[in-house]
Length: 383
Image (tube, rainbow, N blue to C red; front, side, top):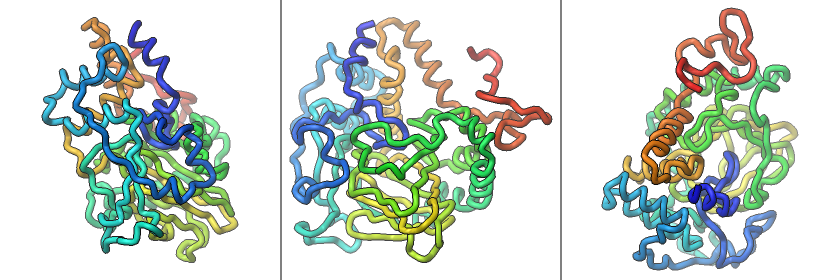
C-alpha cells in the first residue's frame, strides 16, 4: 500500500505516453515550469549548459525512488549498472543535463555560439555518445536492414488499414495527440498510433497491423517503443528535445508527399535532411531537432525508439525494470508472493501478442473467415 501511495504522489512527467517524450523521472526545477519547450525555445535556454551534481549519497528507502534503487541493487550487480543508478539519482535530484555536443559530431562543430547541437536530457545516463545522425544505420545495423526489407509489406498494410475506416476504428487510441505539456512543441499536426509502449505491446493495434508488428518483432531491434506517426500538410514541429539520451529514434518513412523533392524535412542539431520512403534513419532526439511538412498532403512514418547502442545488456534490463516499476509498483512490495505475481504480470504484458495463427487473417483479426473484434483471446491459462 505504501508503494501505491508513493506512486500516486509522483508528477505526471513520470508517466509519458508513447509519442510524447520518452522519459522516466525529470521534474524540472532549475528552469521553473515544464513549459519551456512549447512553441518557442529561446537561444539562452537552448544553449545553456549544466554541471553534473554529486550522486554519491544513496536515496532514502522511504521514498518510491529509494525503493526502486534498493530493488535495482538487489536484482543486479551494482558495478554492472552504476550508470543507471547515477541516472536514477540525477532524476530524483531534478537534474536536467544540458551540454554542447558539437565536438562529438563528424566533422566536429566548434562554434557553440551559433550551433543548435545542444543536448537536453532530464533523463540522462552518463557516458553515452551524443551523435545527431547515426549515418549508414540502414546499411550497418541488422535490425534496420531487416525493417528496410519489410518496407513494401509494412506500407501496403498501413495504406490498406488507413483506407478502411471500419477496420481502423477497431484500434486503440488511433491517431492520438501529444498528451503531456512538455510535448506541446509537436503541435496539433502530430498524431500517433501506438504498437509498442515502453516494452508493452498494444494488443488491439498489433492485431490491426500484424505484418508491421511481426516485422518489428522479428527484426531484432532493441525497441522500447514503436508507433506510426502522422504529420499534417503545411505544419511544423518546433525545436525541442525528447528529454532522454539513452534511447535513439529511428524512422521508416512510409508515405512521403512529393518523395525526393525535399518537401518533408527533419533537422537534428545543425543538419537538415529529407525523409525518403523506405530509407531507415537513426538519430538522437536528446539533441534539439525540428521538422516540417511543406507539402499539401499527410506524411506518415513508422517510428521506433531503440535503446542506445552504448548501453550494456544489464543496463537495458535495469532501465526496463525502472519502467516496469512505474507501471507495476507491486514489484517493490515486501511480500514475496506479491512480487512474484507482479513479475508474472510484467512478463505477460511484454509478450508478443501475435502467436501462431492468432492474427493470420490479416488486419482486423480474421481467422477462419470470422472476424474477431476487440482484443484477441488470451492464451489458455491467462486471466
